[in-house]
Length: 460
Image (cartoon, rainbow, N blue to C red):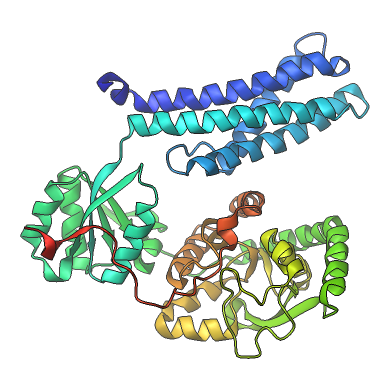
């Protein structure tokens, strides 16, 4: 076992290779048995196999399927299955081109079913192997604000196989000697919102003593982390441009938005028509819902959505959607779960109010509320609001404003057209993930329950 731990990265690499080989072998077997007309007589078949491996590997990487041990088992299985689905669809078209006619669909469908079953087993097996090789680290959490600290502890505590938080220290009430003494007793340190001077000393101590650190970043950390390293004489310097997107990036992004929105409107028009009819037949109310939202430079525009709530949902004032909200209609529950209610925003993108990818447009009331508590929230308005984006894909509907801001700033600071393409592809992954549409808990504003960890003042 000790030997396996020494070569565990190599072991996990071969696990990923074996999964790819198994899924490819399934495709090759179905291809050889059922699509003789799409077989080459010589080396052309190797090109087809290579294209399957390439596509499956690319999709698996984009959807995070290879993040074994990082994502939960059901997310790994879902990501692999979605990768197999898209790969099989493209390969079906490729085989049809080779055969010069549309080949039969059923064998490819059965191939996908077998692959999903295989991936279901592989998902459990790969995560089991990972956690045998990488046991959960014992962690001490450091924080200055207990609510922020407990929030981080709660999130990390969900993945018990990776994180085992056994102690929590409020650094405002603990001297540095005691903090370092506690760091020595654990495998890793989780740092959440503490004084920069103390943070610097703690990170330096962890680096010296080879202790892994998990740092909850603030805006300064994000900006510096995404800066550029330059050399001025014999002095290394980190430069941050702090100007958002450049003029050429803005132009390319706009052209990209126009093309994608036009194609999207044409492709989804039957879905939008069916949705409009269903909403009208359900309660006879208006099909569309319009609301003031905030976009680039604080400009206000009317966002267009399919109505998913009763017509007078905000008669008692603006209110965030909650879990099992009784204001959501029968049709609304379906279209919200599938994100179909967002499709009319393709018209907002076409006319220039929004972009395909960008920070989610917030209501005017929310922007005022969040900006009052966190003035930095306005920084996310350096780019146009988006239909999809970093915070929507990696967060949830009920993700805190601070976390949304941090994710949006990461997107702005690392923008590229390639990243936009990646986020658009990733959007397909979250469409049917329940967590991404999870509403706010009714008790979200109540006092937080203290997690079951040992605080400094509770030690002997």
